[in-house]
Structures are given as structure tokens and as C-alpha cells.
Image 1 (spheres, rainbow, N blue to C red):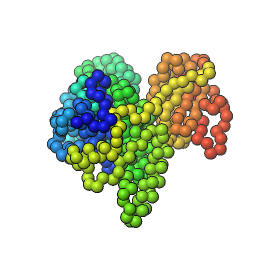
Image 2: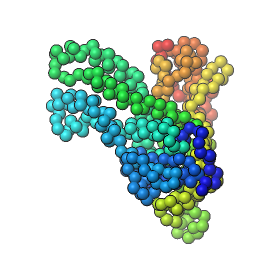
Image 3: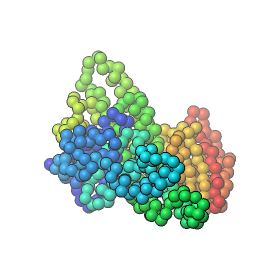
Image 4: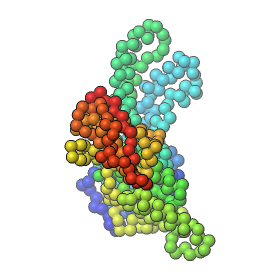
Length: 435
């Protein structure tokens, strides 16, 4: 039976919903409840877990493994185990690395462990998401992601690997082709051959199109699950910043386990006050991103009945697959003779932000994360005039003239100083472009 507010199946690209949050906030139950509601609406739905500590099967109450398996009518589930596929795609590279380590005197288990890059399996989680989303087998793919820190690292992989492959890989291959004969005559050091480079290209090809899919707001949304607790909300704010930096669309915040109004015992008064304070912080801090509320359930939400009850409380008559918030993380607009690139960086402090330019890229660093934004042609021919941070949005101005210079006296406020106590800060920008 279709749920209230249910979307119609068929005819549209697969919708991808990513759920993440601090460990223990209920992201798995929220994802499972959303998936079950989509299936009840008649949509072909896949619930997918990329969390290494899988609990999706426990929440549904059915056995799940690395293969897609039925959960309920219209709903299937999968708990990714990318180890086998990783070993298959990485085998040629791993074999060469083992030779290098053995040449260096590292043998046995140590060499085996060093030949596999930590976190490599995350690449295959991304590849599987893309495969399912482009297979035409599903109307909705609901992803139970790992806790927030791992999710940010996972979703930054397409940027990091693309940058590496585009800049380092071609150079490394050319250098290897030139020096390999010389090295082979002078030393026994194993040199990467064509089969290693071919394996690397196949490995990278698995990510082809992943970034385009996951940053397409018409298809993919991230939903942050929080509980009304100070530490949890603080981590969610940082996560929102980092996701925005990489161009991912957070279309809703789920405030989970909110103390119900029906609980009147005085013992809960301090909890109620703390929850009310943090709910105000969530509503004000994440605006205009909508906030969905789910009350603390009377029992652990496990099994179809409890999950449907949670979904009803969370969505009401709303369509769970709708794009709930539509603010764009990145856009370019014209302001007179200048073009302004704007990037959403909510909750970012001036002191943790660095902006620079090199060649055809704008480099933005927030805390430990850095993104290289490839500039469109219209901006490549211009120089950076200045940058400023206002209300969680970074604005970088590009003026006419050849790239390679920055006007240090200019800012996005036309050179006016920020008002006392205001939310505007000029950001030093460097332009090291060669044109």
C-alpha cells in the first residue's frame, strides 16, 4: 500500500539518499525507516550499508551480506564487503609493491599489510553506489554511511584521486618509461611496468562519474542525523562545512530522539531544557536547511513495524525522496564587470580558512581538508581580485585582466571594512597562476 505523500515510481533517474552522523545517533534506523517507507510507496528500493561495522541487517531483522538480498516487498538490502573486489582490481599493483618491499628487505606479513593502502575498500563502496544508481534496477538507493569522519573521507576520495591521477599519473608513467631501462641496468629495484599502470587506470576508472552523480542535487542528497546534544550538534556543523566544501548537497537535518511532549516527569526537566536549547541551535544554525524531528521511540526501532512508526513520525505526509532543501553549495554570478564564485562553507571560522589559486584551479582549505576547484573558462582568463567570508559563504571575486595578480586592497564588500561584530571577514588570497 502506498504511503502518504508517496512519489510515483518510474520515469525518473535513481534517487540517492546518503545518511550519516556521529556514531550512536540513529543514522542506521533513520536510513532503514526511510528505505522501508520508499518501498511501501511502490518504489524499487535498495538499502545499502557502507559502514564497516554493519548494523543494517540487525535493524531490519533479516540476514544481509555482500550480495543484494530481499528484505520486504519492494525492498532489498546489501552490506558491502569490498575486500574481494579490491583484491581483484589491486592484484597487479599489490604484486609489484610486494616486489619493492622484498627488495627493500621487508618480508612476510609486514609486506602483505603494507601492499594494501588503508581505506582502499572505501573506493569500492563509492563504485558500488554508482553501479546501483546507474543500473536502472532501482528507483531509490538509500545509503547507511559510516560515521561522519569516515563519510567525509569517503566522499572526498573522488577529488583526491582525480587530482592525483590527472597530475601525477601521466608524469610518473612518462618518467618510468624513460628511466626504466637505465634503472634495470644499474639496480635490481623492481620498476612498475605497463601492467601496473593499466591496473591503476582500471582502478581509477571505477570512480568515473562518481563525483558527478553524488554532487548532482537532482539525484543525490545527504541527510545529517543528530541528537539534540551539544557535542553531536558541533560535529554535525563541522561535517556540513566539509561536505559543502566538496560540493555535496545537505538537504535536511534529522533531529532524532527528541524528548516527547507527553513525558512530564520532573526528572526529565533538565533533559527537556537541554533538548530545547539544542533544537534552537539546530534550527538557527542550519537554516535554511529544513530540520526533520523524530521523537524518542518507546522501544528500540527494530523490525518493520517500529521502522514504519519512526518513518511516519519523521516524514508525516512528506515525500521522503523529495529534495527537501535546495541551497546550492557552489555557484558563479555576475556583479557588474566582475564575476563572483560563491562557495557555501557554513560554520567556518576565518582562522581555519585558506584560499589560493594555481593555474586553472582555486584551492580552498578548511581545517584539515583541501579542495581544488577547477575554474570554468570564464574565470580562468581573469585574476583574483579578492575574497571574503560572509555568513558562512565564501565569495571570490574575479576581475578582467590576465590571471597572475591579486588586488590586495579589494574584498567582496568593495573594500569596506567589516562592521564590528559582523559576520564578514576578508580572506587573504594568493594567485600563483601562470595564466
